Length: 252
Ligand code: PEP
Image 1 (tube, rainbow, N blue to C red):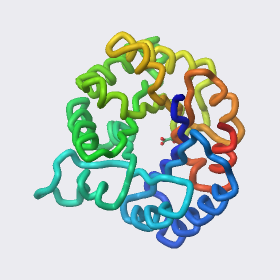
Image 2 (cartoon, helix red, strand yellow):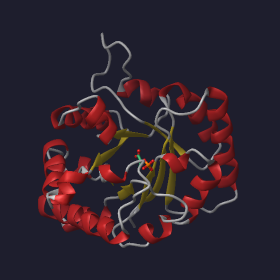
Image 3 (tube, rainbow, N blue to C red):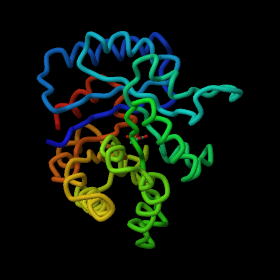
Image 4 (cartoon, rainbow, N blue to C red):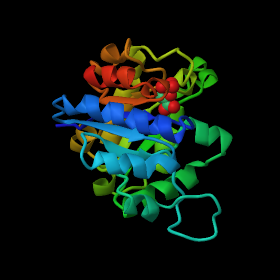
């Protein structure tokens, strides 16, 4: 059965004490829940990863990073490597987020290197893809996503591809309050699954987890998650309040 996931991308938010409080609130709420086949993943900023992985040892969530550098070590001031994340028991790492593509001009090729580096260190990549609004308006969204997958993901061998989580995040929906409709999400998720089937196999296409991200919240999560090819969500703003994040988990 396909793994369902709700992952919270905190982005650059929270002080240490606020982070401590949010992790504790999420841990406490999850304690009372039966999460069979659902993984809850918290992706706080780097300085709070240890706090989160410490609590995660006794709790029902996993921890993800929001970024990684593709080399193992070296003179890359300010960067964090896959072995560092692995040594802190970080299990997931977001890559290809539109904010990193836009503000840090991360290329398809650079993302492919990150992906390979994470897999070498047994960290699950959460690979984000999605089109900007003019591309959707011009009906180029399928082509754009296909290119993102082709250039950063599809060099992987089948057994590595099976370890990847994909997050479809239309850029026009991120942080705008304008989520994709469930039909738009389903259409793109089915398209992505079709590409995976063509490149790898039907079995792999059916088994891979594809998350939706972009203004997903407690009000709209259920109608998105009920779609057959939507396996959960990558949640930004709505992951910053425990109650709302947990309501999204409960929608799965
Ligand atoms: C994100 O940044 O991955 C995201 C989905 O943000 P938001 O939920 O705030 O739109």
